[in-house]
Image 1: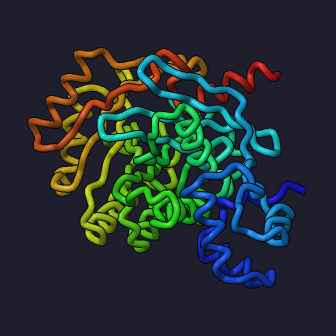
Image 2 (image 1 turned 90 degrees about the vertical axis):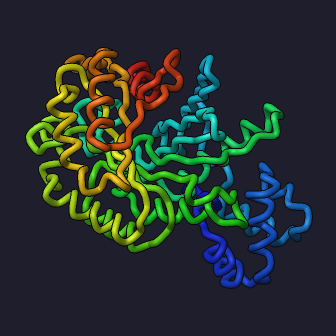
Length: 353
C-alpha cells in the first residue's frame, strides 16, 4: 500500500498525529521546519529527530509520491513538469517567470469532468482527485528544482489553474492553501495565491465564507448563457442566473477584486457584440472586476477552435476599456513548448497507447 504524503498534513494534524503515536508535541514543529524551511529530501536528514521517531515517520509517510517524468524548459524561462503519481497517472505543473516573481500553476485532479470544449485538460475524463499532499508536493518539487539550479530563488506566487476543477476537490484544495500560506510553512502570502473555478456556484459561497484572503478567478469565457453553454457544459448546471449572484455574494463578503478569465476564440466569442455584452454583465461589479483576456493556445484535439486575430483581440480590449471595465491581455508563457494546460500530459498518454 502506498504511504500518505506527509505534505498532506497541516501543522495541527501533524501535531495530533505525533501525540496519538506517543511522541512529544514539539516534534511536529521540528519536522515541519525540516520539511518546509530546510527542505530536506529524506526523513533521515532530520538530525535533531531521534531514531525511533524517524522510523515511525518512514513507516507511515512518504516525502516523494511524485516522480518526475519530463521537464520542458522554454526560452522565456517557463518550465513545465510532467509528474507520475504512485498509481501511474500523470499530472502537469508549470513554473512561470513573471515581473513580480516566480509563479507556479498547480493541478488539482487527474483529468477533468467540467468538459470545456476548447480545453486540453478536459480531453481525458477525471480519474480521481489529487490528495492535498500531492498538490503541495508540486510546489515542493518546483522549489527543489530552484534550489538545485542554485539561483537562491523561491516560489512567490501560486495559481491553482492546472488540470481539473479546484472547487470539485474542495477539502484537499483548502488544506493545500493553508499549508503553503502558513508562516511556518512556505509562507506564500494569501494575496499571492489565486484559485480559478469554472463556476461551481455553491462552492463560491463556501469559499467566500472561509475568509482566506486568497484571490478568486472565474473562468467565464462567454457573456451569455447560449454561448457559454455551447463551449462550457458546466453552464447547464450553473447558468449565469446562478453564477452571478454567487459572485455578488463573494464580492460583498470579501470586498476583494475578482478576475474573470476570458479565452478569445476566433469568430466564436471574440466579436464586439460579445465585448459589449460582457461589459454590461460586469457593469455593477466593475470597481472590483478585472478581465483577463487570454489568447487561445490551439489544441490538436479541438481543431474547430483557432486563436483570435490580433485586430479582434485589440477591438475586444478597447471595447471593454471604453465601457469602464478593467482588463488586460494576458502575457503568454512557454509558447515554444506544450503551452496549453494538459497538452504535455495528453501527448505522453497518446505515446503510451
